[in-house]
Image (cartoon, rainbow, N blue to C red):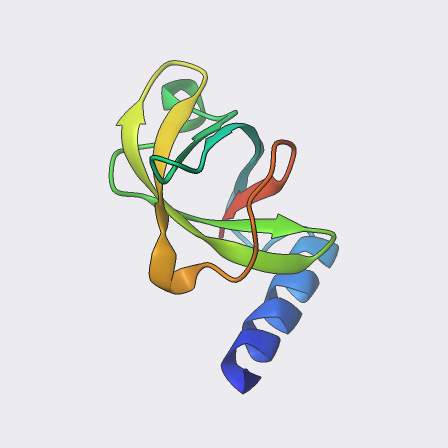
Length: 99
């Protein structure tokens, strides 16, 4: 519980401050296939996304879970929801962030 609070607080600060010195990749969830444990996100190859990249999923500065890129397309990516990093249901329009 304490670890999740610290991660959520760090996510809030990261988003509020607009990231760190480097470029931050962020987008949103376009589609959720909960039965199969994956989501489609709005960023892809043209944004620099590569297979196996990890993203945080959040809503209103609250960490919902972590996803891993499985397939990359030009302007979107398919990602697996990592169940051991998932706190709440992921929904369409939730934010995704690659710090």
